[in-house]
Length: 80
Image (cartoon, rainbow, N blue to C red):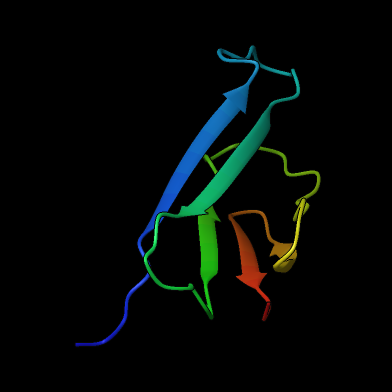
C-alpha cells in the first residue's frame, strides 16, 4: 500500500456577497488530515470570469509562493 495524505481544501470569500466594483478577498486553506505527510502539492484555483486579478500571496510555509494569470492562481508546496 502506498502511504497517502488526506488533503481538505476550504475556500472562503470576504465580503460575501460582493457588489460590482468592490474588492473581494478569497482565502484558500489546505489541511492535511493525515495520516502521512503531503509532498509535491500544487494548488490550482480557477478565478471567476470577469474578475480583475490583483495579487496572490502564500501566507505561510511550506508554501513557496503563488503565480497567477487572469484565469488561475497556482501555489506550490515546498519541502518541509
